[in-house]
Length: 337
Ligand code: NDP
Image (cartoon, rainbow, N blue to C red; front, side, top):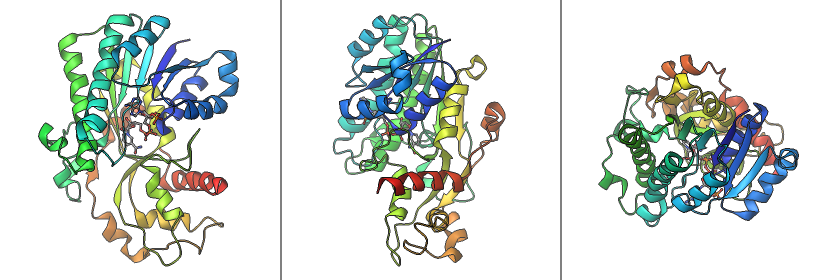
């Protein structure tokens, strides 16, 4: 069975990638940078750690080529890589240092070092984002439709704009994806790449720290933490469940999907949907914000359309609906309170 390296294994999405790879029989090596988070992860996969099916390696800085070299030299058996590690937050103080460089140089570091020190690697799946596809100026236009073929037109200068953490994150995903494509075209490595471009990823975590939530689940947590009569900031977008997103990463290892971008968007959602779903959970019902169900359609009209039909055909996943994704996360959140 293959051996697969997962970068950023302590992350929300990566925990599920590790889980699904292990269930598919892979031996998994996860890179970690925080010993506390690593402990939670090792505890969640205790049996697999004990049996040697899951191993952790330190990668303090995803841009550090030497750290990658050390990992590849220690594990010449690595067949596949899922590169998920990249900063995801809306807090970059120094756009280059905090966001763009780790995303872009992190991508080129893993690709460069795999080319020179990981002769067995056949495929690298890179977690990109809808951010690399969407045109920010049309994101709120419900008549605008995005597909796998679209590219965000943001310039490198716009991506690095100080005081604009949203642009910094969006730009980090765009320019990381471009750097990977350029590497593939220019360097002609012995492996191929598939990019996964998810919209917001929701759902329960495997080793989630509820006191330091990942950025996307914060949207759900804002509703769960609200008080009756309050109005959490409304937002609308597209979502995919974290378990489906992880499955897409594993399916993407197939050679038929080489060089593809896979756009993941199960359905559009708005804050009202999250409020409606959360208010059906007995422990929350009547205690949290209810919003105004009459505004749902109006809220949904503030987001563009995704046409993921090409990806749907290639992956054949039966997508988990928003109802289950939000409920499963909410139940985990309630238990942690
Ligand atoms: P998390 O923040 O939970 O995971 C990010 C992972 O990257 C963490 O393991 C983190 O380490 C690691 N990481 C970040 N910066 C560095 C660095 N400089 N050096 C080493 N490791 C680093 O986020 P998600 O799981 O949500 O995101 C995973 C991937 O999916 C990211 O590439 C993100 O851009 C992408 N994505 C996420 C979406 C979402 O809605 N969640 C939507 C679309 C794309 P540590 O655990 O130590 O902090």
